[in-house]
Amino acid sequence: MANEQFNNVKDFIVYKVINHDRNKELLSTVPYVNYLDLAIVFYRIIPETVDSKEKKAVLITNAQAKLWETTPSELMLAASGNTQRIMGVKIRGIFSTIKEYMGDFSMFEISKKEESEIPLYVVSNSISYYGAAVLLYKDLLKAIAAKLKSDIYIIPCSIHEIIVVKSIKGCEIDTASLREMIDHVNRTNIPEDEVLSSNLYYYSKDTNVLSYAN
Picture 1 (cartoon, rainbow, N blue to C red):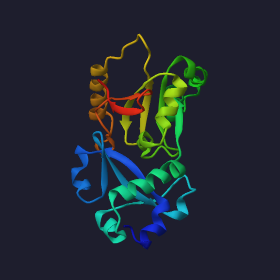
Picture 2 (cartoon, rainbow, N blue to C red):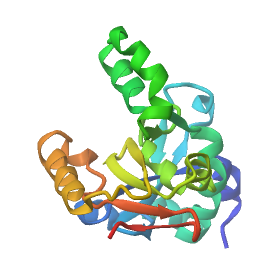
Picture 3 (cartoon, rainbow, N blue to C red):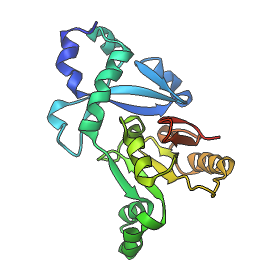
Picture 4 (tube, rainbow, N blue to C red):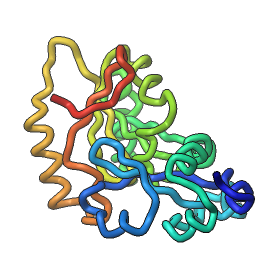
């Protein structure tokens, strides 16, 4: 049972997701929860920065959890209620994202039309930092799938964002090739400490379950 110290900070505890196998050394020092090939770890937002775009946070270690007399399950419960509220969510079309990163205003007309024509969306939190944690937001994938009226594939871009791809009936995605592409991008374009996964995920709107894509 968590103590009073934990109760005083629990409203500021949030989570992020990292690759499990790539972070075994770190995971030996922090409380975490397994999720697919990922690990959910926890950190505490400094209260004075909650409303700031440049939030400051402290990773929660095993020593801190012991001091608070809390468990990974209790941390997960607290973070599940806080992360979406504090970190928010941002969903953009793929061309809008490219335009934002490159400052290329020639893509403005494309980005306006992309939602109906190109079912690719970049999803992150409001500050685009450790935003892949949106995978865990309650009912977010369900809402996206409902809007798209289809199941969805999830491409893990990095620990900061994911790409959502609409599953189009009659148009099969070559999942093996996509996994190869993800692995190639991870090895050549993503800093090693920002790689989330080389797997492709699949969300079923009927079962409300996220799993590895076949």
